[in-house]
Length: 577
Image (tube, rainbow, N blue to C red; front, side, top):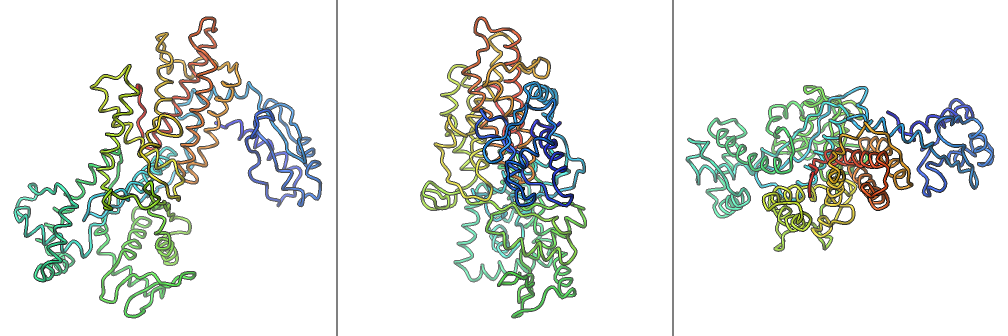
């Protein structure tokens, strides 16, 4: 379906086409919401930008636009203000009609794409040598949200976990495993590491303390790269155990992801380097094979002087595999913004080689999660914060909030599950609330606040919409799409228009892959619902039953929009809080 804004935009576009030369570009945006509702719902400022093209005063151009504009059945007579602003007010019956259509659609009026694509999203990507830490949080939940956006649009999405399961550090780890837990080789099912970080630290101490250990570890690397079956067996055991730790985190965060490690591309690496050299895109510099790229002072290294390959080589192999074997139309990488140069070099190289078409590769770079002091988020002793510890603390912190919120209607048995949902939701929401590319300061107090733009506030609003009909024994969901909307008050009209604005916000969210835009919209919706809640009684004596049902229905529709929006970031709404 089309929103009132899109309907009006099409009318304005038609009017402008009659005034402009055939090859002239239309101004963008055609209309914007007014800052003051007293002036209408939307404003067209196109006349300002067309003065030079049409060689007329903006006000005269505005008059010409209005004269050519057909608004019959859509909005009131346009009004020209100031030097050439055109104010437009949507007819109330159009708002009601669009809201009714939205309420009767399970997708809330949001269409699927006309031409679905096959899209690979590469996110999370932990190093299997260590436990996941807070540095993996942003990639994991931003990547998951992007997948949810694209899946909702109708695309076929492959959620890829490009895990670090190869490299020289595995020689150290595998030799330590072989010496401390030899039974794991014969009985791999018995192998378990309670704490990957401790295991890594102990292996590193052993490596640093003994030349004999170092020599043996380096020999293991050679044997691993050569495909020694015994070493490969130990390596597989270690990787499986490490992934078990990762997937415990993914389950807790409700993340679905498919593992494909760097090792999957090992056999392709020599061919990658050979192809680059044959195409004369790579050259030898100081004994290493490099790709020099215009605009960058340093080249991209693809093979070291000792013959070893690095992650750039693996990334190029992965790109070629994803485009040519998986037949992906797009590949999206979700990593730290500081890796922008690396990916730009890799993308340009892949395009020059014909391994990926232009514009098929996209890097979504995220900012850092900081502590209250504005420095990288650390433990009190300056160490790296394990992701499982952060999530555990989130649930514990949320328990206090949950007990306070649910003192009247939650049992002691309810509290753990509800606080778990609130805790995880708060961590996700607080992260995704900020523009993806920006740094943000982590604060338990802010993220668990009942006021302001937080998961707690939105979850409370959702629960309130579901409980609104309880007094009369009415399930508000049964009224959504079945009763007419009356919208008698300014508060109801404002909420209705904001609900319809979801149709305009969503294309920006999915086009820019910007969860923060979606969350800001949901927050503003919740604020507008508070206005309705305070000004528009439902069960008060004298309220017309038709008005009551309309108010319950709009609350139900709001609940549906919030539930959908929270699902887009992997948060489960709560029926009771």
